[in-house]
Image 1 (cartoon, rainbow, N blue to C red):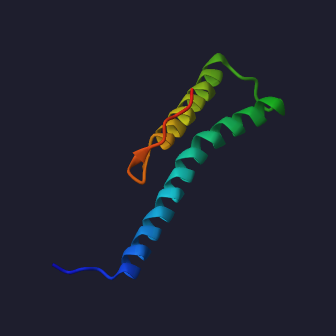
Image 2: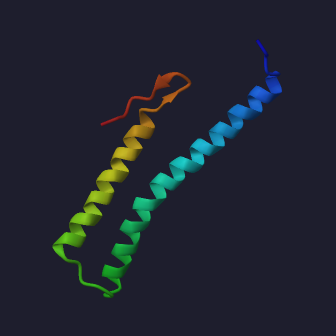
Length: 85
């Protein structure tokens, strides 16, 4: 059995942590960009929102909420952080 030196283990954990944070940021940024883009277009009068577009933006907020809940329930250091209502 080969034991990895502690510095390599630490470096590997830090790399994993950075990748996780980048992935989380990406997953949150996409739906947020959709919501923001639609709201800006509506506020600027570029487009008049249809019920379908409003429903689509609402669906993106539901996705954001689910992603944040999943993040709060992620087992940080082996324990889930209980989401507050």
